[in-house]
Image 1 (cartoon, rainbow, N blue to C red):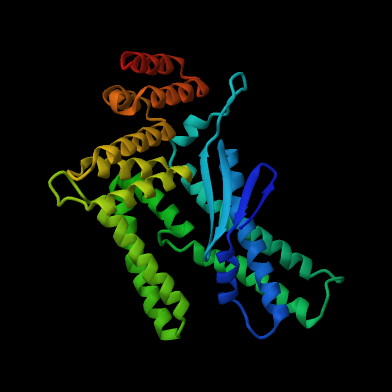
Image 2 (cartoon, rainbow, N blue to C red):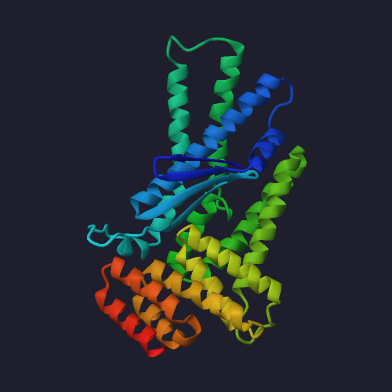
Length: 334
């Protein structure tokens, strides 16, 4: 694994990213293979930097990881030192437009990079060799064609996240379910077209996409009177919730935590982890009333040390009244 930083943004590159890139690329020559890895690496990194930079503008700390066939950007609430004027992060966190802005920033960073490559290629001094022409075409394909495909309204693509956010604004909590149903339909159609064209890797991606959305639907539809969710699925939901928290998506974290807490098979330790996830999701979304009720009701399960972490977060976010109430919860439980 390779690690470095771009400014304040840490970047990790897994070996599997290089291997999967080679599997997708040309095999006609060693030079083309090496250049292909460079094309994908630079293009995907710029895409993820788009997500990360906009996330930082919105008040998050960001980290990038390139792994498998994808790049990932992780966002978490920025620790705000005392005495430092804060940006209006809580207000931004309450807006679903935040998710849309972060999701669109990746593809449009790629479009900007592709436009720059095209402009440079039009300069009289640009090399006219076959290799330079090949390199230009690969950069344009990856940044424009891949970017357009990434805007398709299919979860978990960036366009799917935008689609889900828009539906959530219109239909509330049901919006994410509608987005998953639509994603399954779109992926099914794309898979059939890929099968007809013999694009077997695209078929694999579409099948994987359908499986992801079926899992999301199963995890999001368990209710109080529905069948009990198996323990391994509950743990998978917990992992999904914390991953969403890392991306700065408090809504998904809250949904996953509430599903776990509704299940009759939730063990005590898993319940505590779900409560922590729910509390952090509400903190991230700025749902202070709901957060305070949760912390008071679950103060014994959370314990003094965990409550004091929320007390510190409340102070950093300039919520002194909530911070004092949380401190009182912690003191009452000692």
